[in-house]
Length: 249
Length: 204
Image 1 (cartoon, each protein chain N blue to C red):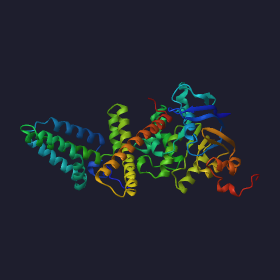
Image 2 (cartoon, rainbow over the protein chains, first blue to last red):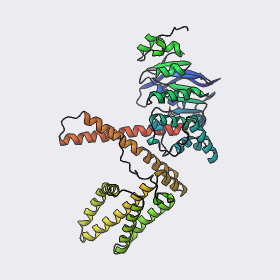
Image 3 (cartoon, each protein chain N blue to C red):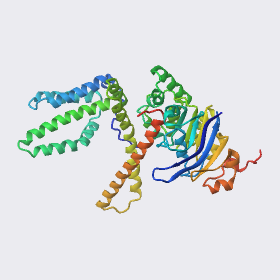
Image 4 (cartoon, helix red, strand yellow):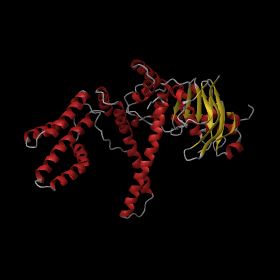
């Protein structure tokens, strides 16, 4: 079953500048999908549509389906719960005074009982390897820890689809490796938008190449990312790990 | 990053820090209200109040230099009002009254914020049924004020590293530029934070 299905989605910013043109993509249950493209290609805008944050008005071009149901104003609450969105800058997402309150934010919004919230938070923090961080203040965490707390805050909502916007952009190699391991270990459907092409090759089975708001190409990660002329012409590059790999091995 | 935390000493471990947060919050609010309402002729009250607060400062092991510096940074407003008061007939008494009362109140709040973690204060406010929206706004303010300071510091440093000849007017212009940049960035960040809150089920 397709957990996520985007059909002919178009969107223009309030100033009239087109951001997405007729974008279609899908993800099967449990699949890990990569979205790549240069700066300003429309990746983040596309991700905001997956969670129903955009469009603000009622007349979107095309539609987004989450677990079979279209995203509408009436279904937004369910969509927020089904789709977990990890933002690029952890500081945008960690808006509570303590780690515990931040991870608990989603579950308590969805009306879980206090005991249950506590359990879910402990479990989410364990999942990302940050047990005992409950009382810490987000401002005093390292970049890698912040990003993991963000992930815990989303896992605590128990989403069916995880949407990650540049998850590794602020991390050092160790933080990046740890986060990659975490993402790999999750069984949910995952959508990753990133410039970190090694990460995309490593984690994603299929990728979509986005440029100028359009899907330029899609297919198996190794095939798309291994196509050097295509990568170069859209402001990307062939990852090192694919430089010496035979295309049919 | 170097930080001049506004509540640098909130996590010490002294008898004052160990007092229940609700007691400290209520005591502070009570003391402020009482001080404001006490007639200025009651010198004994003000003297006792001052001595009491200084004793608390000592018991909480707050460095005197830190407390003095903090009071000083809050002083311009007080002094401004005091000077205005001085300019009216019989102004000296009014000015003294304003100086004493506001400094006592500021000191009390300063002690509260440096003996109680802000998250605890918020918890008490929530328990006291202060409107949830107000508590949320306070929480967000506390969370992002440090980020704002960081950002201002980074921008000032970046400007300084590219600035060679500066006359006074130039410096004012640079400062204005930084302030306006901070405003734009904060507005954009506010939008992103709101999106992040919505994504996790926040309902307006």
